[in-house]
Image (cartoon, rainbow, N blue to C red; front, side, top):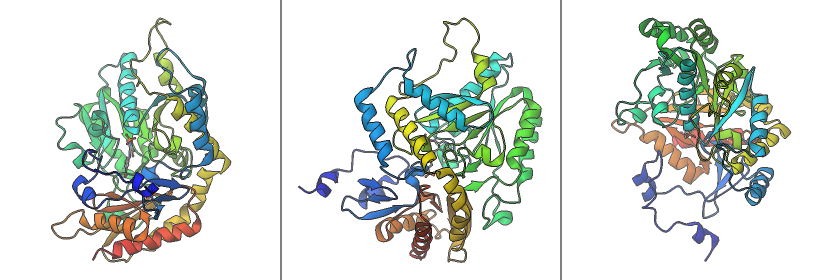
Amino acid sequence: MTIAQIDQPNDLDAWWMPFTANRAFKKNPRMISRSKGMYYYTPEGKAVLDGTAGLWCCNAGHNRETIVSAIQHQAGELDFSPTFQYGHPKAFQLATRIAELAPGDLDHVFFVNSGSEAVDTALKVAIAYHNLNGQGARTRLIGRVRGYHGVGFGGISVGGMVANRKVFGSLLAGVDHLPTTYNREHQAFTKGEPDWGGHLADELENIVALHDASTIAAVIVEPMAGSTGVLPTPKGYLQKLRQICDKYGILLIFDEVITGFGRMGYAFAAERYGVQPDMICFAKGITSGTAPMGGVLFRKGIHDAFMKGPELAVELFHGYTYSAHPLACAAGLATLDLYADENLFERSRQLESQWGDAMLSLKGLPNVLDIRTVGLAAAFDLASIPDAVGKRAYQAMHNAFHDLGLLTRLAGETLLVTPPLIVSEDQIGEIADKVGKAIRSVA
Ligand code: PXG
Protein backbone atom coordinates (compact mmCIF):
# COMPACT_ATOMS: atom_id res chain seq x y z
CA MET A 1 0.00 0.00 0.00
CA THR A 2 1.42 3.40 -0.92
CA ILE A 3 1.46 6.36 1.46
CA ALA A 4 -1.13 8.07 -0.71
CA GLN A 5 -3.50 5.15 -0.19
CA ILE A 6 -2.97 5.09 3.57
CA ASP A 7 -3.70 8.82 3.73
CA GLN A 8 -6.93 8.47 1.76
CA PRO A 9 -9.92 8.09 4.05
CA ASN A 10 -12.10 5.31 2.72
CA ASP A 11 -15.43 6.73 3.80
CA LEU A 12 -16.28 10.41 3.87
CA ASP A 13 -19.71 9.98 5.40
CA ALA A 14 -19.22 10.06 9.16
CA TRP A 15 -17.37 13.37 9.61
CA TRP A 16 -19.80 16.30 9.60
CA MET A 17 -17.39 19.00 8.48
CA PRO A 18 -17.48 22.52 9.98
CA PHE A 19 -18.50 25.54 7.90
CA THR A 20 -18.42 23.34 4.80
CA ALA A 21 -20.77 22.49 1.97
CA ASN A 22 -20.59 18.85 3.07
CA ARG A 23 -22.42 17.29 0.14
CA ALA A 24 -20.50 19.20 -2.51
CA PHE A 25 -17.20 18.46 -0.77
CA LYS A 26 -17.87 14.76 -0.48
CA LYS A 27 -18.75 14.54 -4.17
CA ASN A 28 -15.55 16.30 -5.19
CA PRO A 29 -13.17 16.56 -2.19
CA ARG A 30 -10.27 18.93 -1.67
CA MET A 31 -8.03 16.73 0.46
CA ILE A 32 -4.85 17.83 2.24
CA SER A 33 -2.53 15.38 3.95
CA ARG A 34 0.87 17.04 4.42
CA SER A 35 2.43 20.49 4.84
CA LYS A 36 5.82 22.14 4.77
CA GLY A 37 6.83 25.80 4.69
CA MET A 38 4.49 27.66 2.31
CA TYR A 39 2.94 24.49 0.90
CA TYR A 40 0.25 21.95 1.50
CA TYR A 41 0.30 18.62 -0.33
CA THR A 42 -2.61 16.49 -1.46
CA PRO A 43 -2.59 12.74 -0.72
CA GLU A 44 -1.43 12.27 -4.33
CA GLY A 45 1.55 14.52 -3.58
CA LYS A 46 0.42 17.60 -5.51
CA ALA A 47 1.74 20.87 -4.02
CA VAL A 48 -0.77 23.59 -3.12
CA LEU A 49 0.57 27.05 -2.22
CA ASP A 50 -0.96 28.09 1.09
CA GLY A 51 -2.60 31.41 0.29
CA THR A 52 -4.50 31.51 3.59
CA ALA A 53 -2.10 30.46 6.38
CA GLY A 54 -4.44 27.54 7.01
CA LEU A 55 -7.38 29.40 8.54
CA TRP A 56 -5.47 32.65 9.17
CA CYS A 57 -3.37 30.88 11.78
CA CYS A 58 -0.16 29.38 10.40
CA ASN A 59 1.66 32.71 10.40
CA ALA A 60 5.14 31.12 10.56
CA GLY A 61 4.37 28.67 7.76
CA HIS A 62 4.09 24.92 8.18
CA ASN A 63 5.98 22.25 10.08
CA ARG A 64 8.69 24.58 11.26
CA GLU A 65 11.36 22.50 12.92
CA THR A 66 11.67 24.35 16.21
CA ILE A 67 7.94 24.27 16.84
CA VAL A 68 7.64 20.62 15.85
CA SER A 69 10.45 19.57 18.17
CA ALA A 70 9.09 21.69 21.06
CA ILE A 71 5.75 19.88 20.78
CA GLN A 72 7.40 16.47 20.46
CA HIS A 73 9.61 17.12 23.47
CA GLN A 74 6.71 18.41 25.54
CA ALA A 75 4.57 15.34 24.77
CA GLY A 76 7.32 13.16 26.27
CA GLU A 77 7.86 15.37 29.31
CA LEU A 78 4.47 16.54 30.56
CA ASP A 79 1.48 15.52 28.45
CA PHE A 80 -1.28 17.07 30.53
CA SER A 81 -1.49 18.67 33.90
CA PRO A 82 -4.48 20.25 35.59
CA THR A 83 -4.50 24.03 35.63
CA PHE A 84 -7.29 24.41 38.17
CA GLN A 85 -5.39 24.84 41.48
CA TYR A 86 -2.15 23.53 39.91
CA GLY A 87 0.33 25.10 37.54
CA HIS A 88 3.10 24.17 35.14
CA PRO A 89 6.10 26.36 34.32
CA LYS A 90 5.49 26.90 30.60
CA ALA A 91 2.03 28.41 31.19
CA PHE A 92 3.55 31.13 33.36
CA GLN A 93 6.42 31.68 30.92
CA LEU A 94 4.08 32.00 27.96
CA ALA A 95 1.72 34.38 29.76
CA THR A 96 4.67 36.62 30.64
CA ARG A 97 5.92 36.59 27.05
CA ILE A 98 2.50 37.50 25.64
CA ALA A 99 2.01 40.28 28.20
CA GLU A 100 5.40 41.70 27.19
CA LEU A 101 4.25 41.86 23.57
CA ALA A 102 0.98 43.61 24.41
CA PRO A 103 0.72 47.40 24.64
CA GLY A 104 0.35 49.35 27.88
CA ASP A 105 -0.78 47.60 31.03
CA LEU A 106 -2.39 44.58 29.34
CA ASP A 107 -0.44 42.54 31.87
CA HIS A 108 -2.53 39.46 32.57
CA VAL A 109 -3.40 36.50 30.37
CA PHE A 110 -6.23 33.98 30.72
CA PHE A 111 -5.72 30.91 28.52
CA VAL A 112 -8.43 29.12 26.54
CA ASN A 113 -8.40 26.87 23.48
CA SER A 114 -9.95 28.87 20.67
CA GLY A 115 -11.04 32.28 19.54
CA SER A 116 -14.66 31.51 20.39
CA GLU A 117 -13.72 30.68 23.97
CA ALA A 118 -11.57 33.81 24.15
CA VAL A 119 -14.57 35.93 23.17
CA ASP A 120 -16.90 34.27 25.67
CA THR A 121 -14.26 34.74 28.36
CA ALA A 122 -13.83 38.44 27.59
CA LEU A 123 -17.59 39.10 27.55
CA LYS A 124 -18.13 37.25 30.83
CA VAL A 125 -15.27 39.05 32.55
CA ALA A 126 -16.57 42.42 31.32
CA ILE A 127 -19.94 41.83 32.95
CA ALA A 128 -18.41 40.34 36.12
CA TYR A 129 -15.99 43.29 36.41
CA HIS A 130 -18.78 45.84 36.47
CA ASN A 131 -20.67 43.66 38.91
CA LEU A 132 -17.67 43.64 41.28
CA ASN A 133 -17.47 47.41 40.95
CA GLY A 134 -21.04 47.81 42.16
CA GLN A 135 -22.37 48.48 38.64
CA GLY A 136 -24.37 45.29 38.20
CA ALA A 137 -26.74 46.98 35.73
CA ARG A 138 -23.94 47.19 33.17
CA THR A 139 -24.72 43.99 31.30
CA ARG A 140 -25.29 45.12 27.73
CA LEU A 141 -22.77 44.07 25.11
CA ILE A 142 -22.22 45.99 21.88
CA GLY A 143 -20.87 44.30 18.74
CA ARG A 144 -20.90 45.38 15.12
CA VAL A 145 -22.75 44.44 11.97
CA ARG A 146 -20.50 42.13 9.88
CA GLY A 147 -18.38 41.36 12.94
CA TYR A 148 -17.23 37.79 13.56
CA HIS A 149 -16.45 36.65 17.07
CA GLY A 150 -16.60 32.89 16.77
CA VAL A 151 -19.50 30.55 17.24
CA GLY A 152 -20.31 30.41 20.96
CA PHE A 153 -23.63 31.94 21.98
CA GLY A 154 -21.79 35.04 23.23
CA GLY A 155 -19.81 35.37 20.02
CA ILE A 156 -22.75 34.96 17.66
CA SER A 157 -24.82 37.36 19.74
CA VAL A 158 -22.33 40.22 19.43
CA GLY A 159 -21.36 39.02 15.96
CA GLY A 160 -23.00 40.46 12.91
CA MET A 161 -22.95 37.79 10.21
CA VAL A 162 -26.54 36.90 9.48
CA ALA A 163 -26.07 33.26 8.46
CA ASN A 164 -24.23 32.55 11.72
CA ARG A 165 -27.14 33.90 13.80
CA LYS A 166 -30.47 33.49 12.12
CA VAL A 167 -31.26 29.83 12.86
CA PHE A 168 -29.90 29.76 16.41
CA GLY A 169 -32.77 31.16 18.40
CA SER A 170 -32.92 34.23 20.55
CA LEU A 171 -29.20 34.41 21.40
CA LEU A 172 -28.03 36.56 24.35
CA ALA A 173 -30.43 39.23 25.51
CA GLY A 174 -29.30 42.84 25.81
CA VAL A 175 -27.02 43.05 22.81
CA ASP A 176 -26.84 45.89 20.30
CA HIS A 177 -24.72 46.51 17.23
CA LEU A 178 -22.74 49.34 15.71
CA PRO A 179 -23.20 49.67 11.95
CA THR A 180 -20.64 48.07 9.65
CA THR A 181 -17.75 50.30 8.62
CA TYR A 182 -17.91 49.07 5.03
CA ASN A 183 -19.40 51.20 2.30
CA ARG A 184 -18.49 50.26 -1.26
CA GLU A 185 -19.59 53.55 -2.71
CA HIS A 186 -17.07 55.46 -0.59
CA GLN A 187 -14.36 52.85 -0.17
CA ALA A 188 -14.10 50.61 -3.26
CA PHE A 189 -10.57 49.48 -4.18
CA THR A 190 -8.81 51.04 -1.21
CA LYS A 191 -5.40 49.89 -0.10
CA GLY A 192 -5.16 50.01 3.69
CA GLU A 193 -7.50 51.91 5.99
CA PRO A 194 -10.16 53.87 4.07
CA ASP A 195 -10.33 57.64 4.50
CA TRP A 196 -14.12 57.51 4.66
CA GLY A 197 -16.01 56.13 7.65
CA GLY A 198 -14.22 57.27 10.83
CA HIS A 199 -17.41 59.11 11.78
CA LEU A 200 -19.28 55.80 12.08
CA ALA A 201 -17.77 55.38 15.56
CA ASP A 202 -20.11 58.19 16.62
CA GLU A 203 -22.96 55.72 16.28
CA LEU A 204 -21.89 54.50 19.72
CA GLU A 205 -23.21 57.80 21.05
CA ASN A 206 -26.64 56.93 19.65
CA ILE A 207 -26.54 53.48 21.25
CA VAL A 208 -25.58 55.06 24.59
CA ALA A 209 -28.40 57.58 24.18
CA LEU A 210 -30.88 54.73 23.62
CA HIS A 211 -29.83 52.35 26.40
CA ASP A 212 -28.02 54.70 28.81
CA ALA A 213 -24.33 54.16 29.61
CA SER A 214 -25.21 52.70 33.01
CA THR A 215 -26.50 49.54 31.26
CA ILE A 216 -23.56 48.98 28.89
CA ALA A 217 -20.67 46.68 29.86
CA ALA A 218 -18.47 46.54 26.78
CA VAL A 219 -17.97 47.13 23.09
CA ILE A 220 -16.24 44.41 21.10
CA VAL A 221 -14.78 44.95 17.62
CA GLU A 222 -12.17 43.45 15.35
CA PRO A 223 -9.51 46.03 14.37
CA MET A 224 -9.91 44.50 10.90
CA ALA A 225 -13.00 42.39 10.29
CA GLY A 226 -11.47 39.31 8.72
CA SER A 227 -14.01 36.53 8.27
CA THR A 228 -16.60 38.76 6.72
CA GLY A 229 -14.14 39.74 3.98
CA VAL A 230 -11.23 41.91 5.16
CA LEU A 231 -12.86 45.16 6.22
CA PRO A 232 -10.15 47.47 7.56
CA THR A 233 -11.45 50.01 10.04
CA PRO A 234 -11.51 53.52 8.58
CA LYS A 235 -8.93 56.07 9.65
CA GLY A 236 -9.65 57.51 13.10
CA TYR A 237 -12.45 55.04 13.86
CA LEU A 238 -10.82 53.05 16.65
CA GLN A 239 -9.42 56.18 18.31
CA LYS A 240 -12.91 57.67 18.38
CA LEU A 241 -14.42 54.47 19.76
CA ARG A 242 -11.84 54.56 22.57
CA GLN A 243 -12.74 58.16 23.41
CA ILE A 244 -16.46 57.43 23.60
CA CYS A 245 -15.90 54.29 25.71
CA ASP A 246 -13.74 56.32 28.12
CA LYS A 247 -16.36 59.03 28.34
CA TYR A 248 -19.00 56.53 29.50
CA GLY A 249 -16.98 53.94 31.46
CA ILE A 250 -17.56 51.26 28.82
CA LEU A 251 -14.88 48.59 28.36
CA LEU A 252 -13.35 48.29 24.89
CA ILE A 253 -12.47 44.78 23.73
CA PHE A 254 -10.38 44.19 20.61
CA ASP A 255 -10.94 40.78 19.08
CA GLU A 256 -7.48 40.18 17.65
CA VAL A 257 -7.93 36.49 16.89
CA ILE A 258 -6.96 37.26 13.29
CA THR A 259 -5.12 40.56 13.63
CA GLY A 260 -2.80 39.37 16.42
CA PHE A 261 0.67 37.96 15.85
CA GLY A 262 1.77 39.78 12.75
CA ARG A 263 -1.11 39.78 10.29
CA MET A 264 -1.22 43.60 10.57
CA GLY A 265 2.53 44.10 10.91
CA TYR A 266 2.65 44.18 14.70
CA ALA A 267 2.23 41.77 17.60
CA PHE A 268 -1.24 43.30 17.99
CA ALA A 269 -3.16 45.71 15.77
CA ALA A 270 -3.73 47.85 18.87
CA GLU A 271 -0.10 48.93 18.41
CA ARG A 272 -0.63 49.73 14.72
CA TYR A 273 -3.46 52.08 15.63
CA GLY A 274 -1.99 53.42 18.88
CA VAL A 275 -5.21 52.54 20.69
CA GLN A 276 -5.19 50.88 24.11
CA PRO A 277 -8.09 48.44 24.52
CA ASP A 278 -9.11 47.06 27.93
CA MET A 279 -8.94 43.48 26.72
CA ILE A 280 -7.51 41.68 23.70
CA CYS A 281 -8.81 38.29 22.54
CA PHE A 282 -6.23 36.20 20.73
CA ALA A 283 -5.89 32.65 19.31
CA LYS A 284 -4.69 31.23 15.97
CA GLY A 285 -1.23 32.80 15.49
CA ILE A 286 -0.17 32.27 19.11
CA THR A 287 0.87 28.71 18.16
CA SER A 288 1.01 29.37 14.41
CA GLY A 289 -1.92 26.97 14.25
CA THR A 290 0.09 23.99 15.52
CA ALA A 291 -1.93 23.40 18.70
CA PRO A 292 -5.34 24.73 19.74
CA MET A 293 -4.87 27.76 21.98
CA GLY A 294 -6.47 31.11 22.62
CA GLY A 295 -6.57 33.62 25.40
CA VAL A 296 -7.55 37.03 26.67
CA LEU A 297 -5.21 39.80 27.76
CA PHE A 298 -6.57 42.01 30.55
CA ARG A 299 -5.47 45.42 31.71
CA LYS A 300 -4.06 45.43 35.19
CA GLY A 301 -7.03 47.26 36.70
CA ILE A 302 -9.49 44.64 35.48
CA HIS A 303 -7.42 41.74 36.78
CA ASP A 304 -6.73 43.46 40.09
CA ALA A 305 -10.41 44.14 40.69
CA PHE A 306 -10.90 40.38 41.02
CA MET A 307 -7.93 39.84 43.36
CA LYS A 308 -9.86 40.78 46.47
CA GLY A 309 -11.75 38.83 49.10
CA PRO A 310 -10.49 35.82 51.05
CA GLU A 311 -7.20 34.48 49.71
CA LEU A 312 -8.43 30.89 49.54
CA ALA A 313 -11.46 31.83 47.45
CA VAL A 314 -11.52 31.22 43.68
CA GLU A 315 -11.60 34.70 42.12
CA LEU A 316 -13.12 33.82 38.73
CA PHE A 317 -15.44 30.86 38.24
CA HIS A 318 -14.35 30.24 34.71
CA GLY A 319 -11.87 28.06 32.82
CA TYR A 320 -11.56 25.03 30.58
CA THR A 321 -10.00 21.58 31.13
CA TYR A 322 -7.48 22.39 28.44
CA SER A 323 -6.74 26.01 29.46
CA ALA A 324 -2.94 26.37 29.10
CA HIS A 325 -2.49 22.81 27.84
CA PRO A 326 1.23 21.93 28.08
CA LEU A 327 1.51 21.03 24.37
CA ALA A 328 -0.04 24.35 23.37
CA CYS A 329 2.19 26.28 25.78
CA ALA A 330 5.31 24.60 24.40
CA ALA A 331 4.10 25.34 20.87
CA GLY A 332 3.36 28.96 21.82
CA LEU A 333 6.80 29.57 23.31
CA ALA A 334 8.56 28.08 20.28
CA THR A 335 6.31 30.08 17.96
CA LEU A 336 7.04 33.40 19.69
CA ASP A 337 10.76 32.61 19.49
CA LEU A 338 10.46 31.94 15.77
CA TYR A 339 8.48 35.14 15.15
CA ALA A 340 11.23 37.08 16.94
CA ASP A 341 14.18 35.23 15.36
CA GLU A 342 12.83 35.80 11.85
CA ASN A 343 11.37 39.28 12.52
CA LEU A 344 8.13 38.08 11.02
CA PHE A 345 5.92 40.91 12.30
CA GLU A 346 8.28 43.44 10.77
CA ARG A 347 8.48 41.38 7.59
CA SER A 348 4.71 41.51 7.30
CA ARG A 349 4.82 45.28 7.72
CA GLN A 350 7.49 45.63 5.07
CA LEU A 351 5.66 43.45 2.56
CA GLU A 352 2.29 45.13 3.07
CA SER A 353 2.61 47.76 0.35
CA GLN A 354 3.87 45.33 -2.29
CA TRP A 355 1.14 42.89 -1.27
CA GLY A 356 -1.52 45.56 -1.62
CA ASP A 357 -0.28 46.65 -5.04
CA ALA A 358 -0.12 43.06 -6.30
CA MET A 359 -3.68 42.31 -5.22
CA LEU A 360 -5.08 45.62 -6.46
CA SER A 361 -3.47 44.98 -9.85
CA LEU A 362 -6.43 42.63 -10.42
CA LYS A 363 -8.82 45.60 -10.48
CA GLY A 364 -10.62 45.59 -13.81
CA LEU A 365 -10.95 41.81 -14.08
CA PRO A 366 -14.46 40.77 -15.06
CA ASN A 367 -16.86 40.29 -12.14
CA VAL A 368 -14.58 41.92 -9.55
CA LEU A 369 -16.68 44.46 -7.64
CA ASP A 370 -14.13 45.46 -5.00
CA ILE A 371 -10.67 44.56 -3.75
CA ARG A 372 -9.58 45.41 -0.21
CA THR A 373 -6.14 44.95 1.28
CA VAL A 374 -4.64 45.68 4.67
CA GLY A 375 -1.71 44.05 6.46
CA LEU A 376 -1.07 40.75 4.69
CA ALA A 377 -4.72 40.18 3.87
CA ALA A 378 -6.83 40.74 0.79
CA ALA A 379 -10.43 40.19 -0.27
CA PHE A 380 -12.05 40.10 -3.70
CA ASP A 381 -15.80 40.75 -3.85
CA LEU A 382 -17.22 39.02 -6.91
CA ALA A 383 -20.46 39.58 -8.80
CA SER A 384 -22.95 36.78 -8.20
CA ILE A 385 -24.11 34.54 -10.98
CA PRO A 386 -27.88 35.24 -11.30
CA ASP A 387 -29.92 32.90 -9.05
CA ALA A 388 -26.74 31.26 -7.71
CA VAL A 389 -25.39 33.49 -4.94
CA GLY A 390 -22.02 32.24 -3.69
CA LYS A 391 -21.41 29.96 -6.67
CA ARG A 392 -18.83 32.14 -8.42
CA ALA A 393 -16.55 32.45 -5.38
CA TYR A 394 -17.02 28.75 -4.53
CA GLN A 395 -16.10 27.70 -8.05
CA ALA A 396 -13.09 30.05 -8.07
CA MET A 397 -11.89 28.57 -4.76
CA HIS A 398 -12.41 25.03 -6.06
CA ASN A 399 -10.60 25.70 -9.35
CA ALA A 400 -7.74 27.45 -7.55
CA PHE A 401 -7.18 24.33 -5.46
CA HIS A 402 -7.52 21.68 -8.14
CA ASP A 403 -6.26 23.40 -11.27
CA LEU A 404 -3.90 26.10 -10.03
CA GLY A 405 -2.45 24.68 -6.79
CA LEU A 406 -3.50 27.62 -4.58
CA LEU A 407 -5.41 27.51 -1.30
CA THR A 408 -7.92 30.37 -0.91
CA ARG A 409 -10.87 31.04 1.43
CA LEU A 410 -14.48 31.99 0.92
CA ALA A 411 -16.82 34.40 2.65
CA GLY A 412 -20.09 34.32 0.74
CA GLU A 413 -19.27 35.78 -2.68
CA THR A 414 -15.86 37.02 -1.51
CA LEU A 415 -12.54 35.29 -2.12
CA LEU A 416 -9.86 35.81 0.55
CA VAL A 417 -6.09 35.45 0.56
CA THR A 418 -4.07 35.82 3.76
CA PRO A 419 -0.75 33.99 3.40
CA PRO A 420 1.77 32.95 6.06
CA LEU A 421 4.09 35.83 6.93
CA ILE A 422 7.04 33.95 5.40
CA VAL A 423 5.54 34.43 1.92
CA SER A 424 8.26 35.45 -0.56
CA GLU A 425 8.00 38.37 -2.96
CA ASP A 426 7.79 35.90 -5.85
CA GLN A 427 5.01 34.01 -4.12
CA ILE A 428 3.06 37.25 -3.70
CA GLY A 429 3.19 37.59 -7.50
CA GLU A 430 2.20 33.95 -7.88
CA ILE A 431 -0.79 34.39 -5.56
CA ALA A 432 -1.98 37.44 -7.52
CA ASP A 433 -1.54 35.60 -10.81
CA LYS A 434 -3.42 32.51 -9.62
CA VAL A 435 -6.23 34.48 -7.98
CA GLY A 436 -6.65 36.29 -11.29
CA LYS A 437 -6.78 33.00 -13.19
CA ALA A 438 -9.22 31.50 -10.69
CA ILE A 439 -11.56 34.47 -11.04
CA ARG A 440 -11.33 34.34 -14.83
CA SER A 441 -12.02 30.60 -14.78
CA VAL A 442 -15.62 31.21 -13.69
CA ALA A 443 -17.37 32.81 -16.63
N1 PXG B 1 -12.83 36.02 16.56
C1 PXG B 1 -12.37 36.33 15.33
C2 PXG B 1 -12.08 37.75 14.98
C3 PXG B 1 -12.16 35.31 14.40
O1 PXG B 1 -11.73 35.61 13.18
C4 PXG B 1 -12.90 33.73 16.07
C5 PXG B 1 -13.09 34.78 16.94
C6 PXG B 1 -13.21 32.34 16.53
O2 PXG B 1 -12.08 31.59 16.66
P1 PXG B 1 -12.18 29.98 16.69
O3 PXG B 1 -10.79 29.59 17.08
O4 PXG B 1 -13.18 29.63 17.72
O5 PXG B 1 -12.57 29.53 15.31
C7 PXG B 1 -12.42 33.97 14.78
C8 PXG B 1 -12.23 32.83 13.83
C9 PXG B 1 -12.22 32.41 7.71
C10 PXG B 1 -12.20 31.86 9.10
O6 PXG B 1 -12.13 31.65 6.76
C11 PXG B 1 -12.11 32.73 10.16
C12 PXG B 1 -12.13 32.23 11.46
C13 PXG B 1 -12.22 30.89 11.69
C14 PXG B 1 -12.31 30.01 10.61
C15 PXG B 1 -12.31 30.50 9.30
O7 PXG B 1 -12.30 33.64 7.54
N2 PXG B 1 -12.06 33.16 12.49
